[in-house]
Image (tube, rainbow, N blue to C red):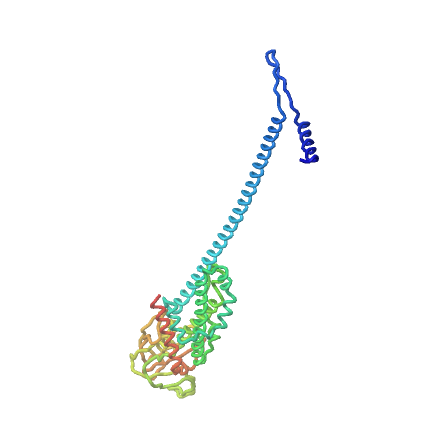
Length: 403
């Protein structure tokens, strides 16, 4: 060992001797004196034990702090996971509500269309009856209208919000599609009825303005979702109402023959009076026949007068609505009473020769808002017009039968 190393070891020994000199502790007990010697080695061992204990305590403390930090991290992770689960649950609830709302919307739409169709067509299966009405309507005709309807509706947004609702959204689009096609078919049918009314020299728009339909009742907001009563359904309802009015108006127009007699004995307008030979105005058509021959209503309506009128003899008058009235005169008997509802072709009287008459015949008049008009244009309706009337008659009969 070199001299320098020896010197260093000696210096360390001296420092330890200075720090830990041998110590003696004197104890007096019972008149005796005892002492305890604490050697340098014992002191160093005690110091080492104390240092080891301190280091152990520090390690335990650090471990506890580390565990505490880990627990805090785990709690934070659990909290974040809980928030994520809550967010997911909220989204699921939102999806569920979206699907339920859409389902309610669809149900409201379907109920609306079912009720609307049953009211006007008496059909229990709206899809089937609608398909029959639509005929050979092409699916591509209203593609632009469908796209526009999709923009108005929140369907695309709902699909992105709730993929589970996609089948319901497709059904909603199908409903709107059906409503669009059905509206076009109804409008064409209403246009045919309007054209038929014009063929009689009447203006369907004026009939619509003059016939103020009585309506009322308390306001009850629509229960469906805000989008349930969409523009397509509103347009369908309006088209249905227009067709209903025009076809009912068409049925009130007297186009049925009031009697089976094929020939006329006197026309509407100017003629020589059969009693005095002077020029006179004849307000109707005369149908010759035999006494007691059935007289039939020329259109659906309500009997408004049964009795006698000067010059006419026995008379039956039928109000058909929209200001139209038919008069049947010179009768020998009555087969209807005031207030009775009668149908086209229904027997209401018997042919006779009462009043100012030269023999058994029927005097038939058509009056519009109290003014006599030529009945010939009504009784000589075109075949296509009669077909439109027959279709309307069949529809109303079907509605009545189905309730």
